[in-house]
Length: 178
Image (cartoon, rainbow, N blue to C red; front, side):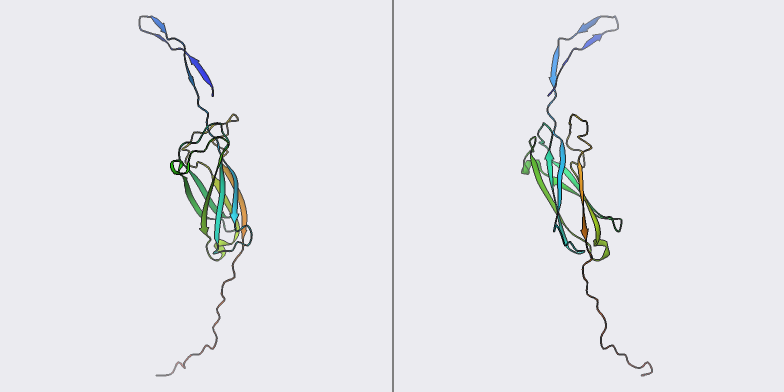
C-alpha cells in the first residue's frame, strides 16, 4: 500500500489560477501469480499412447488477493519430433474455487492421452504459464510480476510396444484359373 498526496492547479484564459486542497489516494496491494511446481504422472514409465496427467501449483506470491478468474496455458511439446502435442487454456474460476489470498496456492491439473507411435515418444516439455491472458493485474517490487509466470519440466516418453503382425499360411490361387 502506498498513499499518494496530490493537488490540482488550474489557470483560465485570463490568467486566474486556482488550487485544490490536498487530496490523497492509496494503491491496493497487488497479487503476483507464479507457477511454483509442475509434475507429471506417471513419474516414470510413460509410453506413447499413454495417459499423462500434468499437475501444477499456482502461487500468489504478491501482497494482494487474486479475486478474479484467470486462464493458465498448458503446452506439451515433443522436443524429439519438434511438434506441439497440446496447447490449451485451463480456467481457474474464482467464483466457485475461491479467491487466492497472498501466500496461498491453488492446485490445477490436466490429463491428456499421448499420440500413439513416434509422435508420442521422446523428450516432452510440459510448459505452464499462469494468467496467460493477462486478466490479473500483477505487481512485485522487482518489476517482474508479469514476466515470472512460467515454469516447465521435461519428461521422457518411450515408444510403446505395438503388435507386429505377420502373415502366416499365405496362399494364392493360380492366375490362370478361369
